[in-house]
Image (cartoon, rainbow, N blue to C red):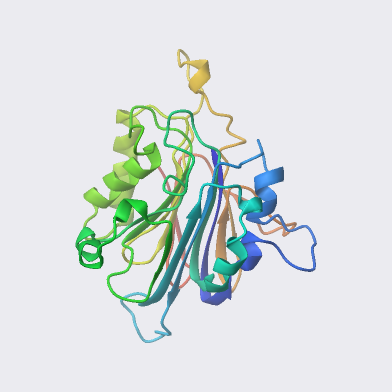
Length: 286
């Protein structure tokens, strides 16, 4: 059970505002504030920030070409990490996925390795570098290949993963394995629909960056049904997801973090895609 903020911005932005808040205060509820004051707080079992920046490629019609990525994860409370402000000097880019964790029982230790978001990069790349991909918690990269998938999740999926791998990381592995050549919107819809029929869960709300560097968001919490175990029924108000769009960016957040009236609640069982031009594609999951 967690809180998430994702951003796709037309131009490079300083994402410190989404993590630490604004110096001038106001109604802004940054990720730090949400860790203490969000719905069902505190969320103190680790945090993670992923940022990707793109080259200036206005004439590139095939997509955005990355130039830098940054990942920092830690098992401490986001409000108590002395290294965070230093790492946020690199949090300037076009795409953000950030997460604060409230760990599900038995779903991975509370440490940086099991904090979200998870990055999926070619294993061959890390063989060359001599790095264990599963242990990456502090990572900067300005060299191809870049992370194909980056994933953050809110909810619990039963009988997926084990003590060494969270259900969230196992779901990312399934997505990466099914979409080796990149995600397509209709294909991801079908994957999710099939997944919901095969696994029991409270929610599979997620943020996902794919290999084409588009941003996907899913709100899908299991609604109460006759005969279901009451202990496995989520509170739909907790498994919320909202989006806000302006000329410069699209923001996806578990909860609205300011008083802007432009926030829209994403309906349950809904998938969104935000592309490089900030176009939003939205569809209901069957």
